[in-house]
Image 1: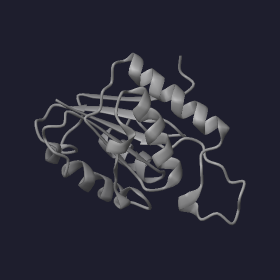
Image 2: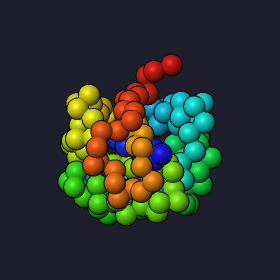
Image 3: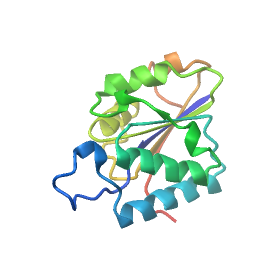
Length: 162
């Protein structure tokens, strides 16, 4: 069984219009939501073997906050440029390249590509607001097979859930 989490970055700040898109930080709500999502995952004993993040500041900060909550060292986060300004196919390529020893993988990125991939994997998911977490369980031994058939489980979680 392979478990894939797609995590959209938390709410970011647009206070500085001169700041390049890639450098936009999280705002206060984003910081709170990322911590809350991390706590929710930790309560469920989610322990990712691999976390891959977009290089964008808002995505990487979200990944770092969540990583700390689920006992994953932030310095072990893999930053992959393919997760910024990506297509759903780019995201699938990243997943397919994951080491099969990993049972649980988290990708931190952006919309619209995360929603598009989540919808492709399960038609039940049609929107991923900021800091939403789509979780998929696949009955396979290889990441290269992810997406070939319906997941055994597909759920969507939000920061505001208790």
